[in-house]
Image (cartoon, rainbow, N blue to C red; front, side):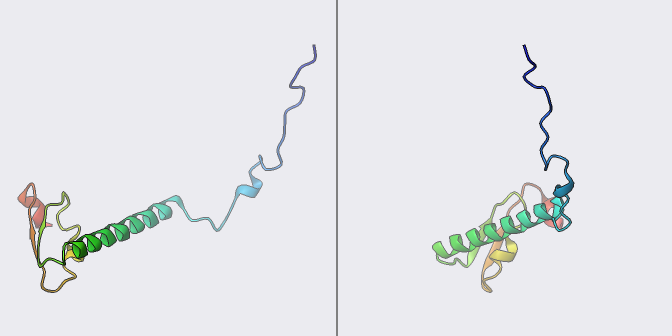
Length: 93
C-alpha cells in the first residue's frame, strides 16, 4: 500500500518572510487605543445619561473608582458633585 503522505506540503507563505511588516503598530499601542476608545465611549454614555436626567445640578458619585467620572460631571459649571467611597484613603489621591 502506498504511503498517503509521500511528500510534505510546502506553502509559499509558510516560511514567514512576507510576514515581517515594518509598519505594524506594537501590541501595547493597540491596547492603549482600545483604552482611549473605551474611555471616550464611557464619557459619551455619561453625558447622554445626564441629558436624559435633565442635566441635574446635584450629582451623587458612588462609583468604585473615586474621581473617575468627575471631569465629565464637572463640565457643567454649576453642578455640585457629592462623592462617597468605601474608605477615606480613596479621596486622598
